[in-house]
Amino acid sequence: MEDRVLEAEQSLLAAILLRNEVFRNTRVVEDDFADPRNREIFRAMGELDVDGIPLTGDMLHQRLNNRELFKYMTLLTEHGISAYWQHYDQKVREYSCKRKLADLAGHLGQWAKNGDRLGEIIEKLDEQIRDLKQKIADGHKSLHQRVQEWVLSGKGVFNVTDCYRELHIVTESHKKLPRESHWSAFVRKD
Image (cartoon, rainbow, N blue to C red; front, side, top):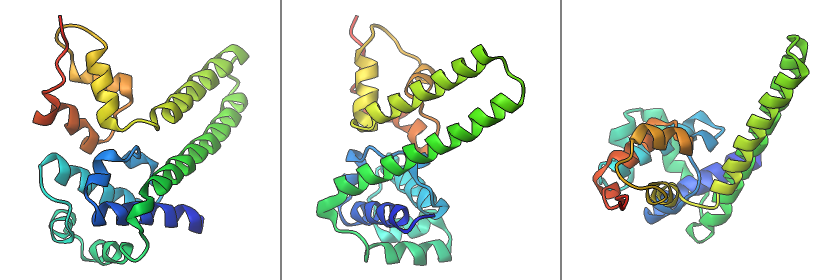
């Protein structure tokens, strides 16, 4: 992994540790982290946030239950300057999109070698690029904003599973968010 990718991820996590409100304002999702350690720490932060528990080092240590990961996490605060968290948020998302684009290039080669019909390859490619464009467009909004907009865009009762699918919410920590009490404020009007 490139040093600047790791630095951006570490700096964003450090900013969250220094200023907990950054977590709710970040546009990064768990899958945007390239480093598995950073992904696990971010997931733990999301679980604590959903449970209404402050994002402190002690609480993260209890949630992670991994001494080596906790030691790594304590080093993160040396990397972050919380005033610049938006910069790191943008960089983590940018690097994530680039990795997804590189993965797409690999898939394109496999699809072509597997003998898929040209129309099917183009359709798969279009779908993947649409998803990537949506991720970039949604990256300018927090998950909170995206769910709120989705809920308010329709009428009547909504199914949380539909919310997951349409907003591409795949991680367990983010799936908890639409089900939690603070989301009950988003009620569709008849």
